[in-house]
Image 1: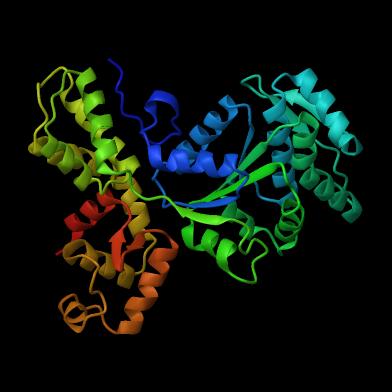
Image 2: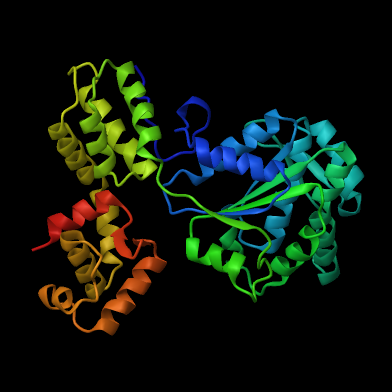
Amino acid sequence: MQNPFKFGSVVTGGDFADRRRELTELVRELTDGQHLFLLSPRRYGKTSLVLTALESLSSRGTLAAYVDTFRTTTPVQLLELMAQAVLRAAESRPERLLRLAMDLLGRLHPQVGADATGKPTLSLDIGTSPRSALALQEEVLDLPERLAMKRMCQLVIAFDEFQEMQRFPGAGLEKAMRSHFQHHRHVSYLFAGSRQSVLQDMATRERSPFYKFGRVMSLGPIPQGEFAPFLEARFKRGRLGVSVDVLAAILSAADDVPYNVQRLCHQLWDMLAGKADRITEGDIGRAIAIILDQDAPYFSTAWDRLSLHQRQVLQAIARAGGRNVFASDFLTVHRLGSHSSVQTSLRQLLKEQILLKVNGEYRIADSFFREWIGTRSP
């Protein structure tokens, strides 16, 4: 039987671990015409949640478009991708999409093709002059409202990894987007991102173009009460019994992070399905050892990029936790030097998302990386 635990890719449908509360909240707010900023650490299933919400909205008759900002490197690419996503939300057949594009973006001379999967692709005649770039910007940023009004329905657009816009030179496109989007009455916008501090600044910093444009929503771990039954049902497919205590130990070993939970369960299934009747806590340790061996090249690369002091800080947190990192005893025992040196290392580790700060405590974001660091500690 195929391993039912999926990790490392976007999942929807039956493979999506039910985030009932978050899913209900997203769908309700977007249906009500609200705009949202969704903040999430890496590996928490943000993209799967966003796509599942869009599927739910689409099934209710709402037009739903998904834009992966991470794929773009210039404002022009983002605008083209946005136009394509918006039009594909309304039409899936190339000939119909072309007619719609000519109707709404005729000045940009749209052309429609197809990708390897048969989905229609859109290209626009942008030109090279500043006037052409401005025309593209004005036409595309007006497109969502014009399409929603033409089809007499609501449109929802989700920008994933929206903070990547900050890499574009200047803030011209960001300002233009806010200027247009604030006048749209039939479109709801969802801005999601895994660089939480950057996206939060975009939503809450007074000088930001998107200041107070929408409510900020943070994505946390999946509650154990939801996750445990989901995992148990999948283990049963392989006739693998698992107790409540062992399920709790699995979730704890993975810090409740959805990616790591699925990864650990995937390894347990590969180890035990068809070979054992029940999973024990000892099996969890064996599975983690295999994962550490598999991921050693990745961990070594990440470790090599760190300064010596950053490594010291991580070793100290892996050994003793990260609640009192500025206490004199902590600094002395782990030979970390001055308060300012630790603060500098922590700031960089947070920026790189190697560390997270949760309720005042610094945590290594990847529990498996933490275990690997522990094997290198004296």
